[in-house]
Image (cartoon, rainbow, N blue to C red):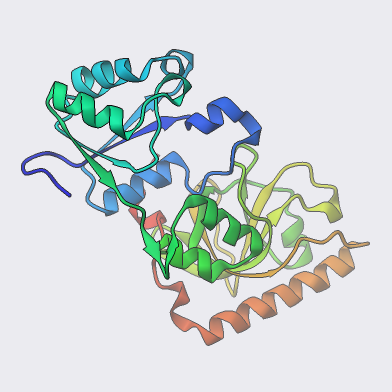
Length: 283
């Protein structure tokens, strides 16, 4: 797929076009921009080019996008796009237009055929469906890694510590996610990792108002405030439930910890590093 002597570059947009047009109705991302860059670097990409997707770019005709962005701006010599790629104002640009203009302007265009796994086309839509259904093994197979979320650990209300289960809290208010519930996972910070019971939700028992990720590291109470952490999700244990009181909530968390411990006892290598955190550059 590589053209001799050319750097491998990926062009992306921020926000994503669907987010620009659909706002809160857009599908949740599988990776943040930061996580995407890390994963692309791991695959040998030399450059990640991010264009701000605003009104001017959204209204740019497809032919002008090719001339102004691809040719004059990026000096493209070889372009790889998906078979169903559309671009430009009104989504008027397609593979045929790119190939025609490539012949005219001096760059080659290659179609990236769909990637199939067990006869099914791998797609972000399918991965989100697996995550929403709690099919974490299927999602991991399509991703090529366990699904995880990264963020900076912040102070919460310390309720978990009062209940006997201190947690690392990562707010998700600016990042819609494709799944909620209670999970057996792995908490990673730099070169350290711990099996963890993980909750993603609104904390209805205590009238929570913001979506938050809480990870309780088994047999450890690391001080992670202010650090960037990744939480991998390996198995869904149950949905989030509103309990009548804190005693009932505490008993449920204790059962989640036991289920997490049992999961990792059967899979001792699940905490091996498949994640993003150790490859992420400091902020």
